Picture (cartoon, one colour):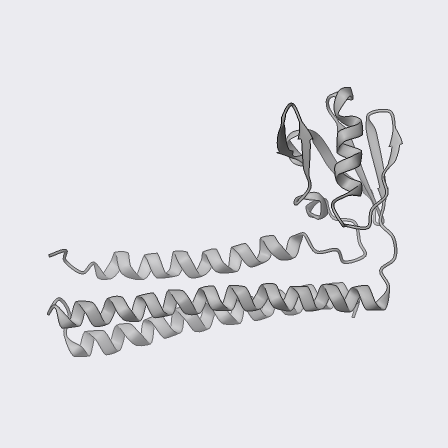
Length: 189
């Protein structure tokens, strides 16, 4: 029977809840806000060399001005596939080709589109909260099992359950603040 590792158990819970928050930040980074951001093109994959590759492995993305992205493609033969991938990514961007550089003007977002993006941000946040709650459930189950096996006392179990709840509450608070900031950025308030 494996001994219950209190320190490792708590570190694992914190790592997993932090992972849920980081995954949310990554998801939100790809949402369009009306301002140019290099993370906007993170989800774009390009069909080249017989496989799908992330744009970041084929080009350098920069923000030369607030409403413009510049994509400097390293290999001249990849210009057309990169342009096609950006057009078909559903980001509403139309590249302007200039040699091995693509200029991407960021169009103004309609109020309706802003609301859609804010709704999408909320759905990402809900997924992150579910992930954090699943971590809490796993932690509580581990504590109950450890108490049942006699590895920890009932008092320790209660104290540690409070710690699990504290870790979860912090993760939920972080998720809410990250989402609120992104929604504010999207809605331009």
